[in-house]
Image (cartoon, rainbow, N blue to C red; front, side, top):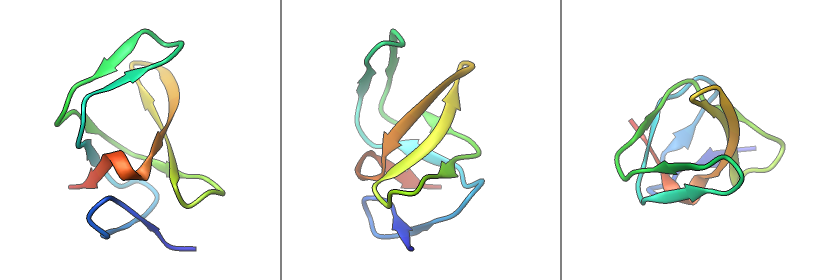
Length: 69
């Protein structure tokens, strides 16, 4: 299974990505600003989702909102 970001670049376990759009994280009370860097992502069983931790909170980001660094 190949997981890609919004530009079509392939993502792998442990990659660093940045957020391409401001996002409000429901239930966590966190707002991710555009350009925020997320380190050490993990891939899930679904090609449109990535798992990551931000401020000790585990969240799932859709790959359409991230860009590989």
